Image (cartoon, rainbow, N blue to C red):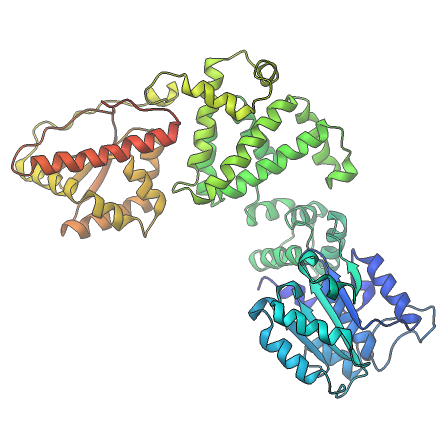
Length: 551
Ligand SMILES: [Zn+2]
């Protein structure tokens, strides 16, 4: 579904190709004066119209009813009515051969090309080869292509397309007429989307199209794929800014502004709550961090005096950024940019994807508490030459050697002593669970890595009424596990492992409180418990970036 519109409304002549006017005009002028190259190189980012232009060019070269004659000042456009034009549109014109070098690096296709290139076109005037992602050809295939390019038969035309021209043999490039396709600007994409929506008879707000354009990083194909997705979800309702934001799972810039404000102010709890909210809405944390980085970049550029035209922003957004940029020091912005770029890498591979950002928020909150009146510009003067992040780490290292948790999280911990009056069979069951704890974690892993990581930060405490009481040390861990879906997974895995139904109850507890075990398994249990606790301490250390004292 996602590319339907792109195919349905693929431009059929040069004038419909938006955003590449310089290229289409040059091509038309050359065609009008009869200057036809034997090899063209179309390079540029994906979705900017390279293969579309290649197909229109193929039509013009083979059209039976060309609009505008040779040496004519009229633009050279295909008629889109003759057999050749129609066959090219439908993708079954015998003399247009499209090769995707990315699929199997073009080995068979180029061999085939070498054999067949000697035969003249079967129906058309020219035999045209469009080779997409030509930089992906193997060395052998590229050399074979070069041989053909050196002495091309008069009736053969190559159109090579690539997103990475620097990877193509210079000897190949030098034989081509080269055209560099530019990323489209937001207004150009908006113009294109407007064309499509008018043809589809769908009402829209201009701001909605701007949102789509901004999410498509300068590619028409991406923009139209997003539009297709939206239309398939929205059943011909009017396309508003609100619909686009909601349905594409975009984050409003005001929301990004708020979370950045929280981070810079050291408000860890607010950040953590917002992260949970994003996760519930299905927004990926990596996407959030990327958006925060983009946002801070714009702030930085505006502070540096870059003007609206270069920022690809609409007036309203520009005003928003202008106001915000006056609130922060440049060093605060660069410091946070640096930290976010660092954790972006970790977030992609983190067991709990929100963990790196949570850690950053907590670190910043500690930093702020320790040094409330400070701001980063003063810090920079005293720590000249050191990066912002290093300054932060130094502060962490000199903090007391215990689990570093901000006050408001510690305050939420309450002691619940439920280990008294435990039945003997329940005690045995708890021992079983502790002995099988590693198997249990392994069982959870395939269902959900995050749950496994959170369980590592918990401790099996007591079994009562066929319910295992699991102790957590941070509210946000406990609440995550208490989520119905997580609980279902955990209870299922645990019940299967034990061969009987076992429910889970989550509690908040305090680190280091030991439970006595008696009986013949006591030693093994103590050893296993030690492993469980080590996992726990390690996870806590990872979360808060501090050192933990052996208790
Ligand atoms: Zn035609």
